[in-house]
Length: 621
Image 1 (cartoon, rainbow, N blue to C red):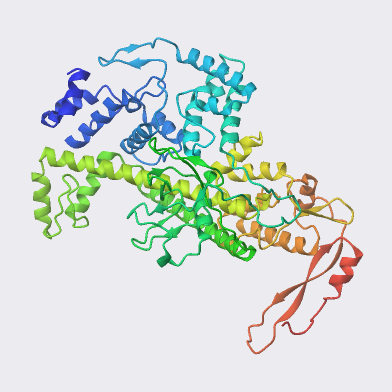
Image 2: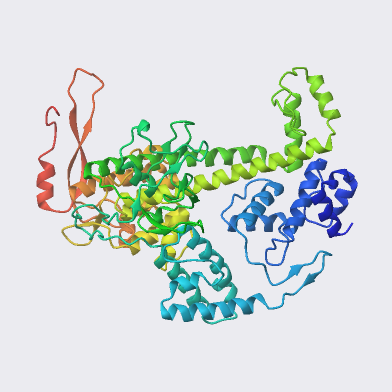
């Protein structure tokens, strides 16, 4: 059968009448497996036919080898963990929701390839020249309109981002550098146009080293509304009086700093997953925290009205409470993600990577053993069956192709919904981390709160190298940024970064070694010579004490000459005095005492201060 015949069979549903051998015959020339049940084979054929309309560099996604498929999935920010069918399902769902520009060749219905009327590279070069001309004129809106998107300064950040991503795929320097000398400048012009249009304009910016007067963000509420948003599960409006939330919680929700629990269905959601509604026509629109301090236009063509978002005044005490809360929330999220990663790695080591056919066999075994209530083939619930023989008999007689196909389609639909839920949750986590970083002051000491993707974006914006681990990215940013506070020693050679309980995680011992290395790099402490978790914690605690006392203790990223001192190759030229630390007796009736421990000091004044604390100094209140 030729491709048009298969398309017709799929459309009419008659493909279910085909024999398994005919389905396998179609799949043999492809990169897809020919194993599995009939419903699985039909699904693979559907993916292959749909892939003809969503080519990647002229190739059908379903024809990609598993290594190339995994690379294509990972390059689009999707999970590359799973079988070939699972990755293909994720990729095809992503391509449906985010169509990409077709490549230079397209495949016809009979399997042959034909070149388009105009070469895609030539079109991209022509587009890049237009971008450069518009950039010279400062016409940022028309740059994002080049592919037909109706973008204005009042468009939502989500609409701007979609237009920007489509343009950046076409004009990326990796594709055009050999064909057009101005490819890099054109790509930078697209990035600049997106940033200038989407950047919120605020009236007041904090000055380094100075406490801002009044609210950090100040603007007018003219034309702004307290917009309605609903729970993504039950669609009940959030922010009702029965919930007991103060009005200024609207600020925290729209900034992405907090998530809330629905009072009806108890689902936890934030601004990225909530259903936002226009205050004029009640139609839904896509929202991003970058839109909060802008006025956007309703995406409903019948409405098209412009509106902003209300900003409530918040006291300084409330903001301080919020800072502590979001920091604790981000720490918990990081620990949870690390625990999930370790469990997934352990499961992968134990079980390895199973194919779709092996996974189906495993589910059938679980069904026979009574560990699964629904049949893995047709989806029929058999809770009343407790006899193992009856379940075996059901599997042996389970051959209703229509029921099996419907179940397979439902399974794929559930997987797509799960993937979409995970994507939205990931976006919410990214927004929450960014909001927490901004609320904490946006200083380098809090870079450990950001995700690896956010750090790469910041490195790209600062023209820094974007390769390497999270620790490497933080180290580059910490060295580049100028907002670090240092305490110089008396001889002017050593410095200590400002380390305090406000910038450190609340529980260092609950963090993994990689996370502790990121915290060290954020505080300008070089983690490379520190080979264990204990050494990392000791370095952070020593830096915290030194920051309080104004004395250097550990090697900093900006002071490479201290490496020899850490390794003991050179003798420190400082005097030694006594450091007091608190120790507790085992007897509850005895008061707490102080015992002494040596530490380095750098001035006679500090030595006199610490020497006064030698020996037992009595009870501690």
